[in-house]
Length: 502
Image 1 (tube, rainbow, N blue to C red):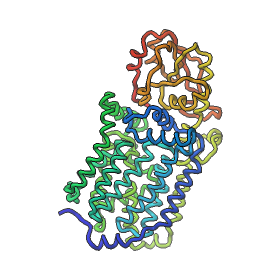
Image 2: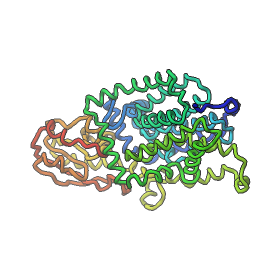
Image 3: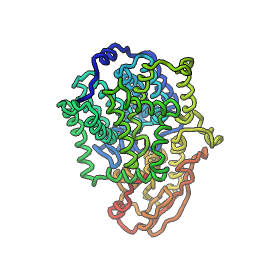
Image 4: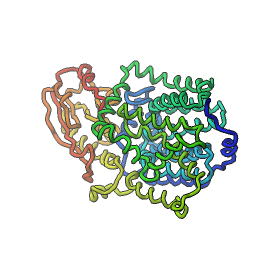
């Protein structure tokens, strides 16, 4: 028989007040922290790619659906060149995730303390706060997954089928940002079939929502078909990057570290456990199995660890609600929970947000810092160095980069230096165009020009790029090559260069 919420459960949840003040303070604090550092350093490499993609608006891209490039276009149109405005959607999405996690706890029957604890776990999560610093698909995805989980939990409690239509709408938005939510629904559907509530699968409005989500993908589907299904090549590219970073063995440790050691990681583990075994939360048992299944799918697919982070919200909410209902143990009774959250936040903050001045990274190379910090520094310097070399190159020399980050940087800062449009065969940038056939020579920014150089008579290093601070990053000391004597047309050369790797 399908598991359903009992009448007492419904009454309890209906009477549970929403902890507005602490939750909204946590959301506002998260947004404020992100806003204060939004303009520090510079664009992240992926953000520069999204800026370039915004100049080539389409219904699809080689490596993603259209949502984030469209957002990049909107924000850069509202305030051209403003890094803070550009990142506002990321800041708002992260703060909203704090509130929605508290709402999940409320739907599970949690009172003020449980709601606040669940919200606090989201607010200090290193993965979410760190990615909330920049505009990317990995920033918006967790909020959209959390919204889906809230709607699911609320449907289980209320059986209001209108929520199922909204599930389809939110899923449609998520699919147009990143396709990963499809894996969630595949696993969730199997979990519902096995553990209930099977009644969910018999609701017509669930399938109406599914139709809305499917129709929203038609433009991207058509773009992919017209361009040879490049998205399929992303799996191999991501898998190669995961293998280079340590492989599948690092998935679970990195996932728990991203949740936040101590509070976040323990909350995730505790939340899964109580969803699976707790009598009070039995109607939501399928969500515990869904969380485990999502992890299994992405481990098998050799995906990035943070692909599974969208399930954190419901796990923290379940953990907070279960703890709130338990009488405190002797050792726990004397210790307030807020200092524990505060210490966890202070411990993780240097690893998640760019707190230090850029020059401090040079003076203290071993100090804690976000993984992305160094890759936000030096892009204007790169454009300056390439422009100086381009002025000494033969007239009409094209600019090509080995990586899409560097091409995006030249697209953003190159015009100020008098550079022509930059091209790259890397990932989605390949689809943005190729050099003009009048360009018989190329200034190539990258470590290995061999695939391109075989179509030229001569290739030699003419300089390198760097940044004025000397921060060590992927572009520091990158060589610049001059390739002369093109031997084939660009129409012949360009298809041979396409590379889905970063």
